Each structure stands twice: as C-alpha cells, then as structure tokens.
Length: 281
Length: 281
Image 1 (cartoon, rainbow over the protein chains, first blue to last red):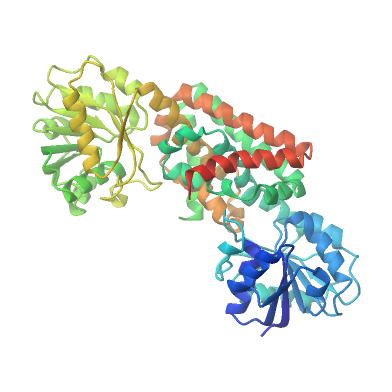
Image 2 (cartoon, one colour):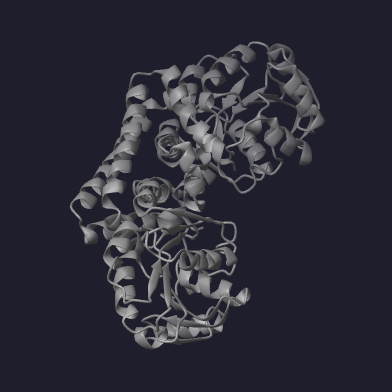
C-alpha cells in the first residue's frame, strides 16, 4: 500500500479510472471522491471507482495523503490552491491535466510549507466522457509524464508520485513544463483540432459513404468540447504554432495538387507515411 | 454460382480480397489473377486468393465472364480498354477504383459491342497494402457504390454486377459518377490528406508521447503513396474544393484561439462533435 487515503477530485473518465485502478491494485486503504454532483459520485461508488464521497472539497482532502486532481485544466490550479490550505503537512498533490506550464506557474510558491505538488499527465483517455466509461486498466502501458516543477523539491516526493503512476501500470518519464506543452500541442492537441475540423466540414448526409479511414481519423472529434476548449486556451501559443505548421503542410498539398505534380504528391504522402510507419500499427 | 470465370486484374489488398471472397463464397468456378509480378501471383495462389494466374492480361481475360479491375485508378481505364479487345461477347467489367468520373469518361463509347463496364467502388480498405493483408470478409457490411454510367446499358447487366458485390457481403447503392467523386473527396480522400499532413508535421522523436488519439487520427497516413497520389490527381477539382473548406475551418479555429474566445471554441468543437456523434462509434 502506497498511501492510506487517496482523494480523487473530479470523478469523470480519468478520475474514475484512477479510483478503479487504485482500488484494483490495492494502492490505498480508501479512495475518497470529490465532485460537484452527488448523483455522479453515488454512481462512482456503485461502479467501484471510489469508497465514499463528498461534494465538499475541504472535507474530502483534509485526511488525504495523496490528492489526485482530475478536473478540467482550467480548474486544476484553483482546486490545488484552495485544498492546500486545508490538508495536513505531508500531503502530496498530483494531477492529470493535459497542459502543464500555466498550472505549474499558478501553483509555484503558493503552497503551504510541507505540502507538495508533483504535476503529472497520463497519456491516456478515450473519446467517451464520464465515470461510466472509466476503466481500471486505462493507464496500463500508457506513458505518464511527470513534471520537474521545482528544483528545490525533495526528490523523494517526486519519486513517490512517480511510483504511484507506475503502480497504475504506466511507464513514467520526467519533463519540464514548457517541453511538455510544446510536444503535446503536436501529439495530442493538434489531432483534436484536425479531427474536429474534418468532422465539421462533412455533411451529415454523407456519413453513410464513409469507411474506416474517416471513422478513425475523426474518432476523437467526439471528445468533450468544454474540456478541450479549456486545453486549447491553456496551451494557446504552442497550439497556434503547431496549427500553423499543419496549415502550411495542407497548403503545400494544395499547390502540388493544383499543379498536377504527381512526383511531388508521392513525396508529400511518403513523408507522412514515413512518420506514421515509425509509430507502428 | 454467379460466373464461370472471374478474372481479377491487380492482385493486391483489394484484388486479393475479391479473390478470397469469391472463392470462400463459391461465386465462380475459378478465379484467375493477373498482375505484373509472378512472385506476388504465386503467393496469392498459396493464400487461396486465386486459383491460377498469368502475367499476360490478354490470356487472363479471354475466357472471363467477369473481369474485376483492382489496379491503381490511373491504370483502370487503360486496362479495361486493352482487355476489352480480347474478351468474348457478354463479358462484363467492373472495377474497385476510388474515383469514377474520369474512368467512366475514358471508357464511354469505346467498348466493343457486347462488352459492358459497370464501375464500382467498395468502400473498404486497410492502411496495409498487398495480398498478404487481403481478407475474405473485407467487403462484409461495407457499402459498395455502383455507377450508372450509361443510360442505354441493359439494366440486367448492372443488376448482375450489383448482385456480385452483394454476394461479397456488401450493401450496394447506385450513383452518378460526379456525385460519387464529390462525396468521396470529402469522406475518403480528404481524410487521407489530413492524416498524412498530421503525421508529416510530427517529429519522429515525439512519437513516444502520442496516445490513441494521434494513432487513430493518423492511421491511414500509412497508405500507399503512389496509389493515393493517383487518386488525388484523378479527383483533383473535388479534392481541392474540400481541402479549401477544411483549411477555412482550421483558419476559423486559429482566429478563435488567437482571440481567446472560449465560447467560440466550445461551439467550434461542438459542431465537429455533433457530426462525429451522428456516425456512431
């Protein structure tokens, strides 16, 4: 057992999966869920994602050893800063946000002595939302990025959080926040932009003429708009840069095609294939 | 049995799957494969995709009742026009090309009397190429679009070809060539553009930081560049139009994001989600 009490704040797909995994792997004596909606929390108990719950953040964290903040990214810093005033010394915070730099900046230097925050981002998710879709194995073999946010932090604390994510089945790699946000803009946020744009320009009456290619390429367009709008805004500069690169690449295709440049089109397609083949199927 | 002899020209993923399906469902007494490479053809016999083979198009089609042309789109019309000079009266051609209008135009009025061409496009495929990846069930529950290319054609011939595709497990719908190319530009060709562009702008060293979203969104970027360059060129005008719409949609995202317009971003994402949710998972 790694912790006596783990509190999960935000019991949706990710938070619910954290709870399920912690309980399945017996990493804590109890998992407390905190969310705004008691109906969702009661359902999370039924599903075995949490042992008990409260809608009161302070009550939920005051006896916690580890607090895992799984809210949308625009609420993470606020939850941590509020909760940190009410936890015991020694309590550790971690999170699951898809952006890191703004959160790290907002929390930096603002925590009471004895309270630590080790940001994390498990690269796991589904296009389905809500605790109903949570799975105990969501993090298995999915990378978790942890953040080295403060050079003065006790290394043992960072290692303890990394051990937690490892114990959920996730290989862990440590990064700086800026690097995380820059890379994830390309590998995660841009795909959401692209999938959504592709779906949006498709007339609904054409959907019956789609095959597996369209289905796969647009799958994540079903993700929650509010959650993703918050991520886009939180990582605005990096996403704008990567969207620009992508738009330039599309413009190159348009020019090659308009010119009827067969060799250029083959090369253009080959460059994409080379990257995708390197990923494996 | 629908035909005595079916000849498949181009024994790759699609042609091989046609052969496997015809043989599995006993729709012909024999399936002859025609391709340029005898090694591939011999492998197709081993895999059970064809009964026998020849690298000589004329020899392969002269006793055929149905010829299924599964070459890249830029060779389909040429194959049909050449082969048509050597088939028996009553032989029917069909194809599996992803574009239709140019092929229909090239073949129209150029076939010998007694020889018919009923264009088809089974909306089935994989990002893997070659007969090794062929599957007998590739067409099951995948729509096949047939083309009404000539108002004077005997309806019984069109129906016979539609019965063939139905017998491979495919629901069939009939369309005009222009409509086909316009719709498929959006539902199939544009996704290939988008997936390739997304993969191409991603540094290979970032691939380890990707998750299921990137994987799905880029999957078809692994498709064969030569095959897809030919499709792009063959459906140039429709693809340029749909690429333009897509680029405008991306530009709208860029403006909303640059302006920090949270409500606009939620709406933008919701419009994509609405279309994708209508498709189902």
